Image (cartoon, rainbow, N blue to C red; front, side, top):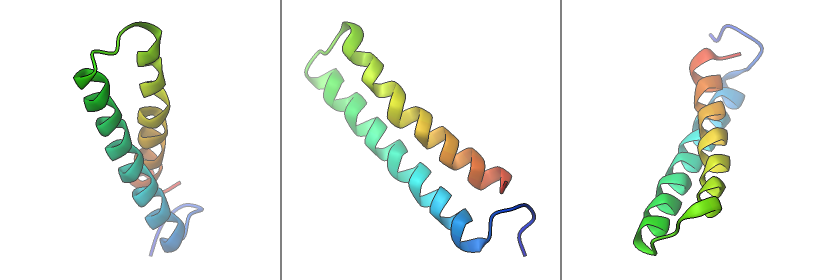
Length: 63
């Protein structure tokens, strides 16, 4: 039984979404490191890491 406004299926979706975006963010960071990307392009990494954090925190908080 879950507490909050998310059911078991939605909670699982948040976990999968967060984990997937975390892997995408880490992969992008490795690619950027490999190709020596510098400057404003590194701001692109903000989006997947932010969305991963939101998904995982919503999973953890179950709200």
